[in-house]
Length: 152
Image (cartoon, rainbow, N blue to C red; front, side):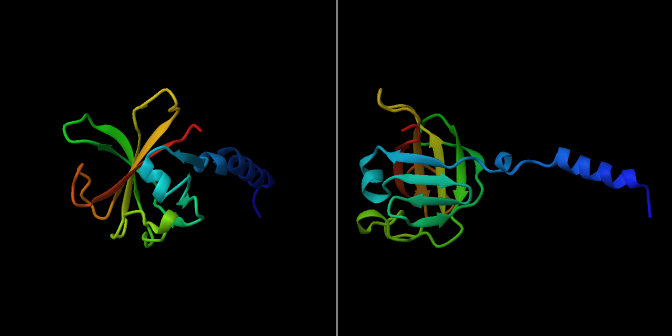
């Protein structure tokens, strides 16, 4: 039947090496829109593991982020950004009858901590939305940009 201490040791080892669920999942962030575009299209946004929820209650499933260097403007320095793939159809209606990517279906989002534009900014975020895999500033795949403050 085996040694009785083996099972107790295995259970203790399992308990000590288990990763708590809170360490795996980052806390949800609530972003307040600061750009006119974000105020009229998305409203307040909650970004949590696996989904983004907009002010009108519409949610979209997103992949786990992968990090990439992204150039937000032509000839600007690159910034570290999070790349998300929208895993389900991302053309739901948001605020004021608008859609995240206008008349196209959004497939990717790139989010980065943008520079503070004024003293009221606490923790600014910019979200660029793309309808395809070309992530160059001004590419035909880029369909919208939204600016938020994650610190309010």
